[in-house]
Length: 202
Image (cartoon, rainbow, N blue to C red):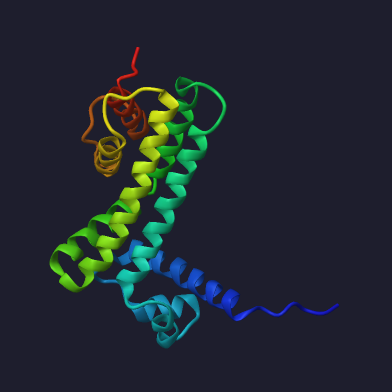
């Protein structure tokens, strides 16, 4: 039986995936500022040269990690909104999904650190701007899906999308720091806010 050879494209994808996994672990352990490209490369089983053949710097890796994760989360919410049932019937699944997302506090920390770096570093700011624009566009599409499912909204998809993008990290941070006294999870609070913004609450 002949072994199927790995194509150059497949090999590069595997290399990038291993670098991404190693980078996430390094960022979580040491923070973005103290993260080392040498340690990331070594942990992934590659040389420093292999890292730079795939990424410009550690911020480039972090942008890809965050973009990949946020794309997946937004797509998951859109799939749930496309499921059978009324909006009230799918809201519990949306709440549960967001609570799972909120459990990954690293992403909130990474996102905050990237934003601070973009404010400080004009060279990095352009790359960050492209990332932020893509996520904003996808979030607005998610907001439009909410409005379509609800059949009514007292706010535009643009405003609801901006609210989703702004509220999500804030609610996660408050839940993780114990700043919310309502007794609700981050997911319960987010869903309640979305319903209030839509204007569809009973």
